[in-house]
Image 1 (spheres, rainbow, N blue to C red):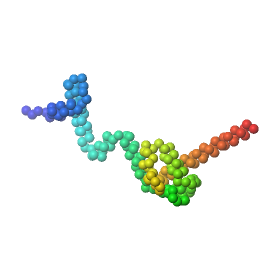
Image 2 (cartoon, one colour; image 1 turned 60 degrees about the horizontal axis):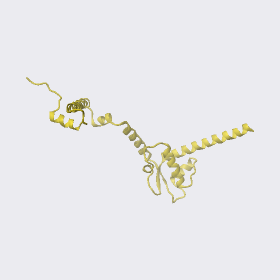
Image 3 (cartoon, rainbow, N blue to C red; image 1 turned 135 degrees about the vertical axis):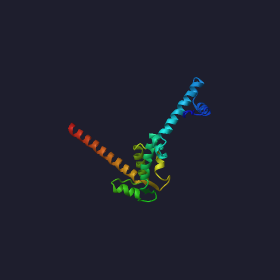
Image 4 (cartoon, helix red, strand yellow; image 1 turned 180 degrees about the vertical axis):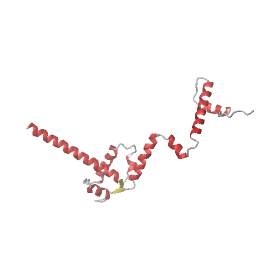
Length: 175
């Protein structure tokens, strides 16, 4: 007579697993917890046996990790198109790009100041120095970051215009 196949672990294997489980009130409950873990592992192995490694990773990946990878891919796309900012020159590609779009920043320090502000306004989880290449001039700045500087500047100009119009209207009403 043949015995039915069981998915139970070897007693020594179960004892090793129980030793890794945090201490419970009794050794029997610790072994029970280890057996439950073993059975869960067996069920998972059977359920995911047909998946490839990539599919397994996708099934168990952390959502936070996925979000960070998406941001990194976006940032890698930024780095395909960078413009140089050079302190030693009167004109450079980064400042020329800003001037062409109506934003005149005369010094490289002002460009960097505005770029940092735009970077921080986007709530990026990455530190600023990692995303502007260089610690000394010339810097390489992504075109997308310069676009964010332009957008922030135009938004500030619109806000300033609205505020001045409101003040002018209030003075007109008072008189």
